[in-house]
Image (cartoon, rainbow, N blue to C red):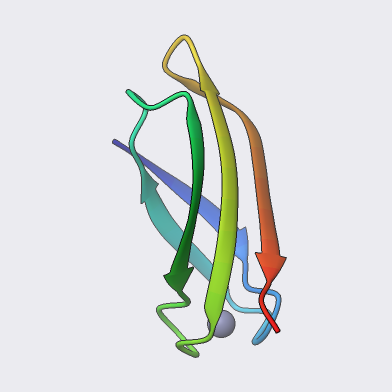
Length: 59
Ligand SMILES: [Zn+2]
């Protein structure tokens, strides 16, 4: 697992999530730990490293 920091698109706080580096394609929704709004994560992992990390707001 790797801790990845990002800026929440709702509250603009710097928050983090734990990314499982054993899964190469990840697409899931998790609530912001600060404001509790749902954020969609699109993550790609290659050779145990995060090569793509996208976050999207959910309407
Ligand atoms: Zn937030």
